[in-house]
Amino acid sequence: MSKDRDNTKMLETLEELVSIKSIAKRGDQSHPFGEGPAKALEYMLEQAAAMGFKTVNKGTYGYAEIGEGEELIGILAHLDTVEAGKDWNYPPYQATMEDGRIYGRGTIDDKGPAVASLFAMKDILDHGTPGKRIRLILGQTEENGDWDDITAYLENEDAPDCGFTPDGDFPAIYCENGIMIARISMPLENSGLEYACAGTAPNVVPDLCQLKTARGTYEGHGKMSHGCAPWLGKNAISDAMRRAAEAEGEEDLPFPAIYLRHIADKHHGEGLGIDFSDDGTRLSVNPGIIRSEDGRLTLDMDIRFPISVTSDQVVAGMREALGQYSGLGLTVEKSFEMPAVYMEKDGPVISRLLAAYRQVTGDLGEPLAIGGGTYARSMKNIVAFGPNFPGHENREHNSDEYLLLEDFYKLREIYRLALQNLLEI
Image 1: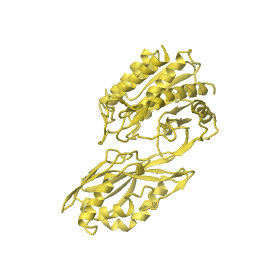
Image 2: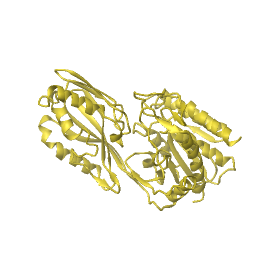
Image 3: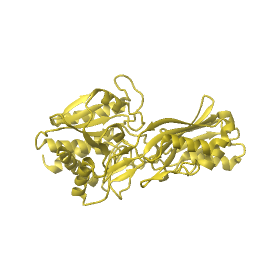
Image 4: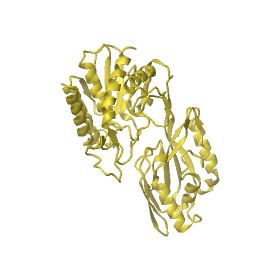
């Protein structure tokens, strides 16, 4: 098959995958994370089997593999996406080509990179069976942070000796900040609010918020973006809190007053006593979910913190900054944590990944430290490698998410070379 025809097949595969709405949720035994993710996994494994790969579908996870031998190179990708949200100019679940861009939810995070990885493996297999196994591990619940798919995988399968997740940035990522979810909570009757609702996940900037007080109802609007870079979006919770305070004043609205004083638009925790920075990265805070349930008001915040700081230090800083409100019953707790990732920049894995990226692009940029969180946290000797190129707009978790067609084809070539390089370790 010619390269052009092969690239056409790759594009058609992505188009079909984008059409599958695959938002992870609690499902049943046949569909552990919902019908959408299960359908996306089944589709990808069908494509891999048609290419001559070995495929395994365990329901909670699946993989496609080529090669033979004891050693295993892993590619960790995920097929679930965040909600589409609003303000799209293109159908989120129908891949649309325009001006050299492929629009659709999941094109850049992470369906496009997963498809490019699959076809990169095909290119290797077309030239003979490699002496090590290469396995594309396909997760279904990365976005909600549970990662039960990867837990199940590690309980039942071989862990890769090395590899990458195509779910970050180029040139390569040697460090990922720690991630935690902090919950601020207080009795609803002390908050000044009667009802609050916003957000679908802590790691997404919410685009709609509804608040109700004894005197009025307020709706806040925003712009979705990834929670690791909340400054790229507009937080609807902040908008709604501001509207309520402007209409009624802060005196009778304790929680909105606290929120506006310590949290709103303070993306690095400046108002919470946690503005830590280290090694080129800075702590970030995203107020992602607010709810009024069972007589309490809760605010869940996604916090990305540098490797020199512990989650306990972050919680301690927040408690000290907000301690003056303890009389209102306000509490701060840590509800979730994921460890940081660190790998030596000049080690064997990153050096070989960099070599592939530099050969294709000519860019001699150095590896990065980021606030984002990827499957690299789940296994040893795995780092995030692409798909976002330096200087290119990143629309993951945003409306009108897209992948440049040129970048899509380039990903295939970079990942092929990267896998060839890792086969030589």
